[in-house]
Length: 565
Image (cartoon, rainbow, N blue to C red):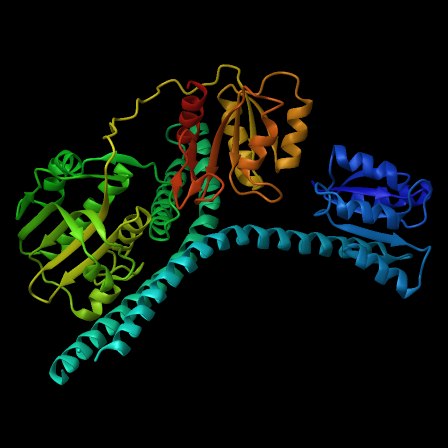
């Protein structure tokens, strides 16, 4: 329920507005002058303020000026409702102060309430734009990336202009430079297209993750309440299955758009491949021969082991589908040095030491037209119902977010080879062990503060945690959370919070609350990566993170894991 603060020194006016707006579904707070209103708002901010102009102690114009200079209050809509001044210059002055609306008395109640709802909707729309601007920050990184590519292309064009050395050699060099420049232009065009599609895909996945969190969570809660044999149970189970499939698609979109949260480890690709051997053989079937050629002195890489496994599995599945009559799948690793010549002819490649991972097959191969589009999301040559068209786009996104590059070589009838290059690192190996499964998911009386601006997601998380025996406090944004922490007398053991919120982001809120509750642990959650806790998709060391959409068990397990650290 939205809260409105009414400011008027006339008790009759206060009463009439109080009755009208309360009947329209608002929660009402009143003040007799500007100073009283300012004091009350700084303790508990409203969702809107409606103020008269002529009042004792502090008039409406002064209140508006102070309101719009206050960092905590300036984003809250300010509406003047007055019969004192009717000169158009008063309205102009009020709007210059920052007021959202200047309404003259008298006004029909329905029209007045309608105007207030219009102000509310405009304010919500502005908040949505602010959330979208967080996504735009990622575009800055992409712009710098493309500027690097353009500089490479410009350098190639300058090199072309400077070619001159006998006539025969000049013609040969010119032709080679023209071909290289043309190839770079095509690579740049493809890269820019992929970046644009990725930005769109990431934004879509972010919005869907909040919706899927609510669908999956309430479906699980409903199934827990239904008895065996209830006719509704199969219906809700189908909703669950559909939500799981949708969540899988959004995960793939996040991978392609490079907005997954990655937990990087220094690892040996050979060890990872050996661990996958049995699973790979089951996936490709008995009619396909699996050959592995692993370099003995292979260097280490820094990547998310789970994501690298997904890359290998997706490439293996793609190769299997290209060999319907059987064939050979070859996986190879090697240390390589990519020199300046290679880097000049491959967009976004920097010279240096790399680990190469190659996955090749003897399948049907691809035409140049198919090869150029192979990493695009939803592009597929398979029959309807045989694939989503996201497998290779997921591979592309994971490799790029890991700081690597991937190239495909293929000809019709001659098979296909994917070559992945990841930077070699000179760091000690980190053990990649399985996570210990925590069987006990119930609370032990701990107090948890849930901070989430999406009301449906917040209600779901609160309900799940309270069912498991936790004491739960809730807030919709940073200022409200700060107020709760200041007023709460006992300990707050854990704060579960969304990363991206209007006003202040999750990381800023945590820093502001540390003095009041230094014992409080933090679990971040989000539907996509944000620079507040990650850098280019890599989670900051020591932080705990829960990816949306989460399941009931996933939330409880992660909460228990963080509390027991």
